Length: 417
Image 1 (tube, rainbow, N blue to C red):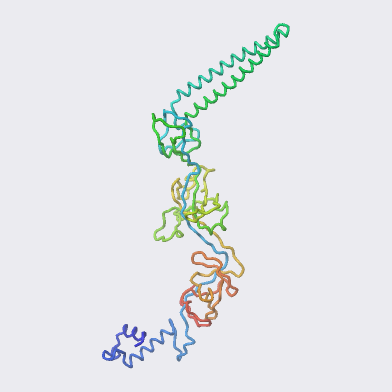
Image 2: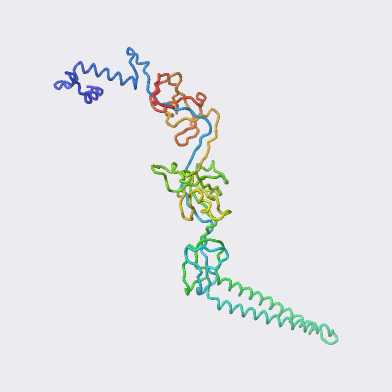
């Protein structure tokens, strides 16, 4: 008993003595005749008719789609991280005891505002001493100048040349000491300034790692300041995108929330589009010159609209239904267009049939199959850009039922545009 007989006899319950012969284990003559009719119908394909047994004219059921033209749009979606361009851990330049901390975590400060101070009593004492030495040397300098002027006025007949030279040397020494005292005073003033911590830019106090009364060493971090007036997005992409990227390109940002039923990042759509609001865009500002060694990806940096020229980027993003905060994650949708090439058309991915001789497509010409070899140029999603002189936009190609179609075989279109 062959496989076709086993399948049919196992599925059919044939009445009137047409069922399997239980004693012999095979169908009787009537069942065998019916089995032959069924196998013939199967060999003819869906909807085919046996015209006096001429199987060469059997038509195969297929689904077709139209060939398209124009450039091929491609979209890649990657997960990026929102970061502050300015992030500093601030420290005092000298050692001392903390006397004040003006801000707490989460509070916003403006550029130039006081953040913290050390006990400045010793620093003020050193500044006072340095100022006193400057005044003292100033008085000595004035006295030396008067003495030199009197000696020069008396002339050589009264004051010897040696005494005159000594007066000039004494004035030079006092002027040098005066310059040194002034330098010491500048240093003392700088020391007083190093006892204060000033915000170098506007931002939010991210962390405060000391308290009032604690002793800190020079260079020990006290406050971590996170700038919120200039945000950037860092995203790692596949290296093959490098050729299609250039600084100044603009791409769409999308939130992590996805519509119900979304299965892949490429299907993530910004809720702002559903409300008719414009999406938030970001400008590519930097492309890494080398790959990240561990992940073999290329790092990109993008500046979202509104950062920094228009203030915090989150303000610009609010109109798009997308809030950007440092530390948040956001999807970046990179959209490209593969240029239109000579003799290139767009076909559905399902139209490609890969055989031993390379890829080909099955076109429908006058109801029959025409197999055309193609060169695959690019692909994006469900569309493929191929090169072939035989196809033009609007032609019909088979997307279902094209696996075992012979050249010139009659086709029956059961679905398509």
